[in-house]
Structure formats: structure tokens, C-alpha cells
Length: 178
Picture (cartoon, rainbow, N blue to C red):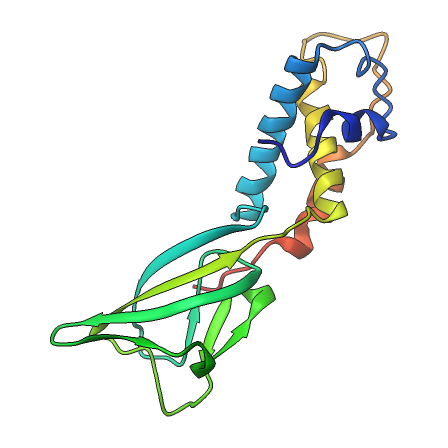
């Protein structure tokens, strides 16, 4: 499923004159592919959904989850060699935009000998405008004519679209240090 719909794409001032004459199925396929490109670049699923992650403790008091922004922390349980259990959600601070949970009491830590199972909901309920615009630009890039040789008639499509896509998405992309 695409992050934008066909009507949104056709309303954008992208300088592409063939959008109205293109079959809806072809356009939807391009939008879906562009949405996949954007999610791959961001390394997240943009739309809100439920996640269950199994993470081995690393000895710190924070735990970075794969998806963000976190909208709801459902549960944190653990499985150890000789014990298992569930922690209270109130035991954790949730850094939503970063996708990180942190112990409130810094004397606690994510132990090396435990596997933590974190259930949570993450993503955007509505797709942010910069992400929608980036998907529209990427769709235009996918539909751009790709033929070699000199072109006497260059299409009036947005120039520097790749740079614009990166600029639009950069603030939503997590930079991992490890």
C-alpha cells in the first residue's frame, strides 16, 4: 500500500503533464514502489502498526527499538536462564521520537543474561507532509522517461528531485552510531 493516493499525486505541482492520461493501475504501482523506496531509505515502516521485538540485554539502562516514533508501549517482559517475568510500563521512560525506552530507576539495567520481549506500537497515524512530498517526487523519478542519446525535448519535470527527496526525508531518518 502506498503512502499517498493517486489524487494527492495528481494535485502536486511536479511539472509532469502525463499524469492525467496514465492508467490508474500503472500510477498506483509506481506510487507503491516509490513508497517502498522511501521506507527503505528511512529504514522504518511509516504507517502506525504493532511490533514485538526480542532483544538481548546489553547492560545499559536504555534500549533502542527498531521502529519509531513509539506511540504506545504495551509491555516489557523478560526471559532468563532460571526466571521470567513482566515489568510495569511505569518502570520506563519512553523517548518516542527516538524509539528508545529507558529505566526510570537508573539502578536497573537490561541484563546480559536476559532476553527482553518488548511489545509496542510505532509509526505515524497520518503520513507527515514532507514524507508524502518525497513519495510524490520519487514517483515522478520512477516515471521519468529512461532512454539514451541526446534529447531535444527534455521533460518539464522537477529538477534536482533526488536532492529534494533527501532533504525532505533527512529529519525522519535515524542516524545509528552502532
